[in-house]
Image (cartoon, rainbow, N blue to C red):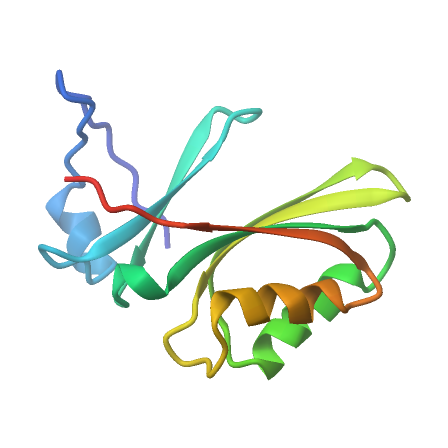
Length: 138
């Protein structure tokens, strides 16, 4: 099911999420949401998160563009008990390299973020992993 609504941006850049959408997605006051902007498509994806901000990270993963590469990445994250909150992947050079932006929640994983980065870089299809923490804005 899809819900559609128009919203106006106020002078501080804020947008109010309509009540019907907040209720449908169980978005409560004080809850964190991830904003993922795709500049090429000129769109913003908003994904609600229930975990604390200290466990949420953005992984920018560069990998080989070959069949099964994305599956290997997501399988490794699952094995490490890392929850994928949002993802956006694209081919950079068809048949050569690709890039994924993956928002992850580490609250159920026994790993720290640096150990996770190292384990992902061990995958034969991964060429680089950059990690970014989040600061909340109000």
